[in-house]
Image (cartoon, rainbow, N blue to C red; front, top):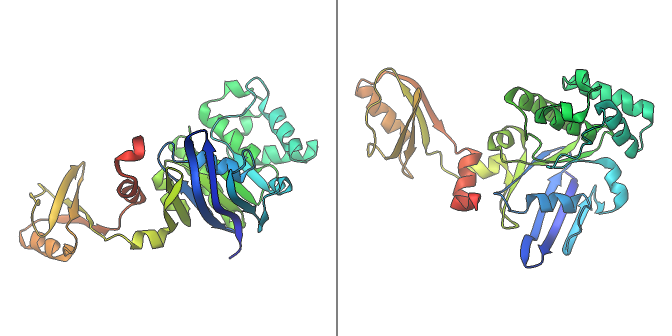
Length: 303
């Protein structure tokens, strides 16, 4: 599958600070890609080099199979982490202005703004000023501005910032529809659950370097299925040390067990049933992306 974005050993330094170091990754056309990493890992710096906001000190950026050129940005939509809306400007006028910056006519920009605002359930806010809207509503307006010119490549830095669960689901569904239409989507986020649901592939970067990458299935296959979710009717028996259980954590309504490498969860299940436990839920679980992130980056994630 051809690549929409290809980074070949790009680096960026700010004085003595290393933001990105020899970073390489490839984003296939028509896929959704997650760029993950702890604070200060180099995610935003990488996105800015893809969009020409800054230039790499070394290495190359290619878009749509060609070396980076400003003309390629006509086909790119970029949603920055920082809000860039004019606070005292009416939303409709602002979207029309931004659409015209992308080469749309006033009429086309207005039509597309209304269509997207209706789709994202914010049409009644088009005639309000930006500073009259909540942070979540402003984020949806920026999302619309990113899509007005129908870009082939959509790059977003923390797109779910400020969104409540209902609007986050609305944005997720919109991104999935855009992918079905053949758009390539790249976003960075701290929301591991959303990456796990949405992305075909990821790159986890730390200190400016890729430390883990691949498709979701490839990544998860590297880790053993050592987590068990258990719910019983009545008191959960003590399980630490039983049949390879090395950790037991009690939550509201269920218990999460971690097994030692090589332990057989079926032996544990058989023992519980023989012991008279009334099991209402039993799930041997592959590691979540959040667990993989923590294992890879460890305690440095908050550094």
